[in-house]
Image 1 (spheres, one colour):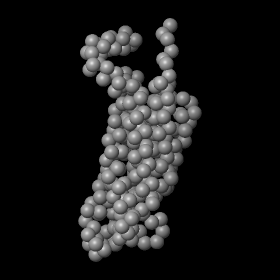
Image 2 (cartoon, rainbow, N blue to C red; image 1 turned 120 degrees about the horizontal axis):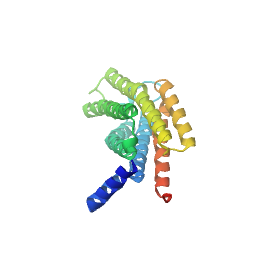
Image 3 (spheres, rainbow, N blue to C red; image 1 turned 60 degrees about the horizontal axis):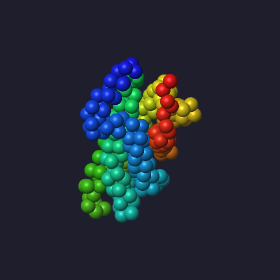
Image 4 (cartoon, helix red, strand yellow; image 1 turned 180 degrees about the vertical axis):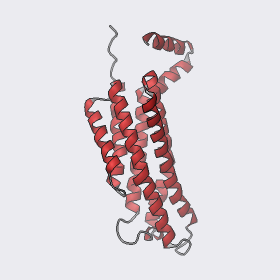
Length: 233
């Protein structure tokens, strides 16, 4: 195994600048930057949506309020960049695991991550279509506004959050097995995964746990990337 890694390192070194680029892509620092970007962007999207959509009363009146509508529009603009950062985070983590990646866990890891992004985009596209159709108080019916809100909320807080739970559990288990995640972060990851898996629908604070966990993991990867590696015996 070590001979294969040494040979791969030598082959990348022979590639010159291209080999150095491949090394940089595989470093934990790249995963940390992508994870931090995703966590901040998704956290901003969730907070903007929480501030824009009323928690009580008529749930269709938010679209007639310019300030609330602008918050939702900004959240929709940030969502694609959050998804792109999350896909980059997945790719770098897989590259970091390399040959140590188990096929069973790799399937659950990749599948849950892609499904989460798909549901996030679907929920955002639903709300974005509503905003594009709005052209005054009488352009869309209150029933249609409530329906769009219900579908988007279900996609994110009922289905998407379960995929986030699977992703958190698999990454935490892989990090524990490979030793790249400390014990305290393993415990946090499993607790977050259970909460995301069992949280009732329309629980905004539970949805926020996922980007917070990604932020913690990314900050750990960033800090450890600056530590010198122990010398080989």
